[in-house]
Length: 386
Image (cartoon, rainbow, N blue to C red; front, side, top):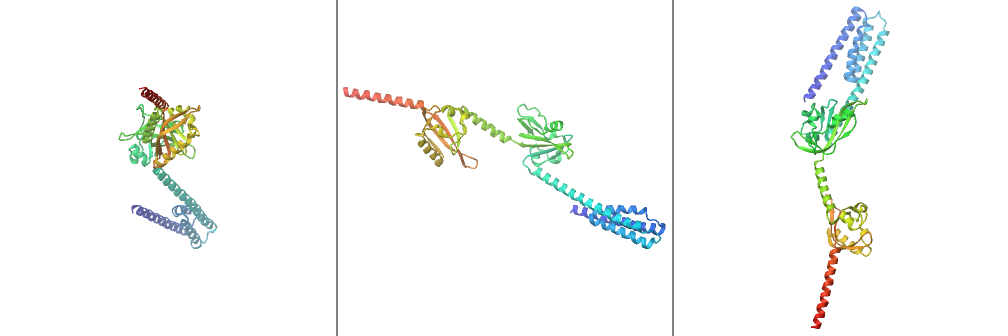
């Protein structure tokens, strides 16, 4: 409501000012034409209301120029009968032409201002809506803008951060050493290039909370190619780093375990194998990525493999004895413990296989069985003799 009142009051002031100027023009016209008898100098003052009206009311403001032009011509006919009218006609025409030109320029300026306001509003809304944190700084390294995400991460409100040194708001350290990291704003201003943060960079918020972040800084360049500021774009990668560390730990465990481990898609194409799995089959891990499981089985072994795969897809798991073939063509028995691998939505996207070579166990079992058979024969012979 206050905005409407102020706007209305401003318009009223314009009308009052214009009324005073037009009244002054009428009085001056009468005085100089009727009393003094000249009309060359004072009409220059008419350009004041003409230009103001055109600036304020655009094309409608041309009516003020038309009014003054008509008044000047009528003044010639009624107050200055001994003076030639040619100059007054020309002057009147110039009033209208100037008013029209100013009105056009004013309209174009107003359109550009409106477009700039819309673009500024759109840009501001975009920066406030994006998921990344954004901080802008001027050439002195003082903060000029923070979006809501940057407010949440730094702990500083927009109005409190404006004008403060960016180092105070964007306080970053090296996570491993705890020492202050070089602020990218200073590097961008110094070198005029896009820069990124070093690895292991953490942001210390106003309340002392530490966030692992990924960041880039870029110069803000005007239409003349001059650097006028810096924009920082960064985001919190704390959870991603924790997930990466957990994944790295699991990968390390998988690589170092003595059990063969493999991750494959539902068609049996290998996505990951550990060293034990690769060595078990006579390969290196790098050689097996993308290969199909069929290379580990002879045609005679495939029926049992296909049966196992059907069981995995139907029940989600399989445990049993499967024979494999090595790179050199030799075969070996294994115990396989396989299960389906699901994504976050619970959809089956692959299979996880754990393989144990049971060649030694099989030999031991065969030797034990052979010894048992031999003992049984001895026992049978002794029984006959006795």
